[in-house]
Structures are given as C-alpha cells and as structure tokens.
Image (cartoon, rainbow, N blue to C red; front, side, top):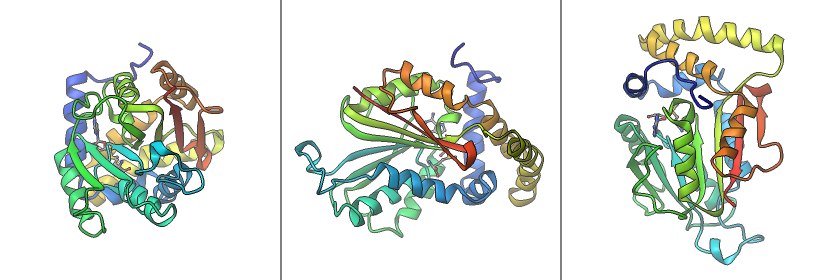
Length: 264
Ligand code: SAM
C-alpha cells in the first residue's frame, strides 16, 4: 500500500519495537549518538529554535496568551520537551507553555521522568508524561493542541497514516505538526559512505557497546525503510494538512529532515 513500508508482520513489529526500546532505554544516548554520528543534539536544538515555542510578546495573540499546549509524541526521554520548555521560558519569557510527553514504552517514560528531576519542571504543571500509542490518543481532546512534535519516533509506528490522522484530530486549526526524523541523504557519494557506516559499523558497535546487535540492526533497517522526503510530505498532506513551502528542511544533507504541516 501507499503506507506499507513494513516488511514484517504488524503484530510482530509492535512487539519488536517495544523490545528494541526497552532494551535500549538505558543506553539511549549512546544509540542516538551512534546513529547520527553525534549530530542529533544539534538537530534537536535547531528543531526547537525553529519552532520557537511559547508566547512571543511581539506576535502574541489572545489564543496563545496562556502559552502553548504542546504534545511531544514518542518523547520518551524528554529531550524535546525540556528543550521546548527552556526555550519558551528563556527566549519567549513564557512561563505558561505546557508539554505533554506521550510514549508507548513505560521504560522510556520512566527514564524521562527520572531526567525531569534535574529540570525546573519536574514538579510543575507544565510537564506531564502519559503512556500512549500515537495511533490512538484517546486522552487528548480534539482541537486542543498548538504544536505536535515527534522526533525520531514516527518511523517506528506501525500505521503512520493513522498516527498522522490522530495528529490532525488533536491539533487546533492553525496548529502545527512538526516531525524530526532520519531521512534520505541527497549526495550519492555521501550516501554510499553513510550506508556503509550504518549497515556495518552500527550493528557491530551496538553489539560491543550495548551487547545487543539485533536492536541496532533493526534501527538501521527502519531508517532505510522510511519514506523519502517527498513521499513523507505527501503522507502529511494526505492526512489533511496544509504544507508550508516545499514541506521539509534537510539536515546534514538529508541524514535527517524536519517536516511540517499546518491544520487548516
Ligand atoms: N523523541 C525522543 C528523542 O528524540 O530523544 C525519543 C525517540 S526514540 C528513538 C523513539 C521512541 O518512540 C521510543 O521512546 C518508543 O517507545 C516510541 N514509540 C515507538 N512506537 C510508538 C507508538 N506507536 N506510539 C508512541 N510512541 C512510540
């Protein structure tokens, strides 16, 4: 099908994804550093700055007077959520913006909660963690979210089209869907080097660092199977979103990309 990128049987896949993230929750930063050659931290910073979360005194309107209501899906360890709250507070002088971190995996959420203790948000009502599948966000009302973010998560979803429709449902009109994900490298020479790196070195390093070759092999394959920039943009469009500009921004020649959609 248009969305059928999965090569393994679906139920098995969900189990496998759960297994991958349970087994990597503790060695999570190492994994991201390996997968992105250490650059994921810069991409995340760029993602957050570019979205500029929080009430901006210069552009503030009444709808956002009380700060933004942000939903960070597949937000496990909380990186994006903490960054959004820091940005809203320090750059936009906004102490109201809230983030709900949703993740399907309780171990990732536990890691996120643990890390939250080192932030000013742990005991505030600006941050909450919920266990949820991106494809079925029953606890999130229609038209309630200003910004929906998903970073390095959507390629693991079984039904990406269903998750995109849920994103559309929960966003307010004018709300923004923003996705940071591994994508397709543009330059063929760089691509050849990158593929060689990811297919041979990463599973090996996974084995050596985390004692888990299979999970790292799965992660490399999931990046390979994920749709191209234009295909993914079209999926976002098919879910009902308006596409701003060309619809995405390549990072590091397309190793990752930021896709956006706006709910009309
Ligand atoms: N967003 C975080 C970041 O960038 O650091 C975590 C990314 S981690 C690579 C992928 C996360 O997706 C895992 O925490 C996993 O549990 C979560 N996940 C996978 N399938 C999901 C689903 N269907 N619904 C919600 N979360 C899911």
